[in-house]
Length: 94
Image 1 (cartoon, rainbow, N blue to C red):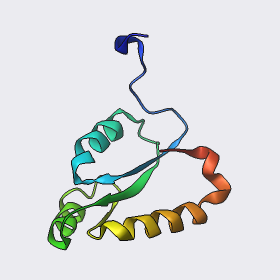
Image 2 (image 1 turned 180 degrees about the horizontal axis):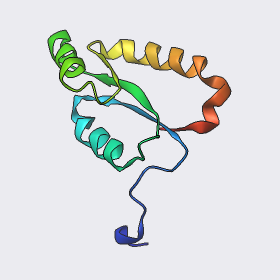
Image 3 (image 1 turned 135 degrees about the vertical axis):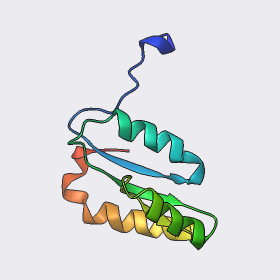
Image 4 (image 1 turned 90 degrees about the horizontal axis):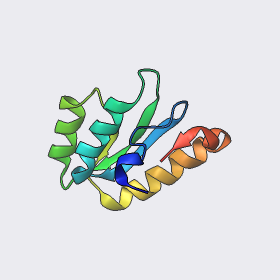
């Protein structure tokens, strides 16, 4: 299969869940822009320091991700989030 034939847009009807560090912001923004307006988006993004995490939350409020500055905390937060949403997991695209 050629890359030109691959579908490069979010699946309709799915809740997009983004998990990554600060290097993934561009990818998250691109996927968010390709999604339909009614596509729910959530997730976590980690930063090297609390100041940058705070700046992301303030300056990029349109991208509904929880910013964290503790790399080990993202695992616990993701686990808690997944447990909370267990009953509707079939609706998510990671």
